[in-house]
Length: 69
Image (cartoon, rainbow, N blue to C red):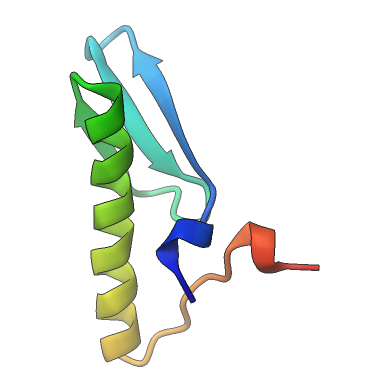
């Protein structure tokens, strides 16, 4: 499974004055950055690290929404 199959979005935070990268399947994770592209790449990298840790621990990894039928 590729972490690129997860659902990502980048929104602007007026409060933080930065972009926030989010992943629907991992609602507790986020990545703040002044640059929109870096916010997206940051959350993708964070999700990849979390998924790798979960797999190494034998935890159930959420399935990407796009893979469910």
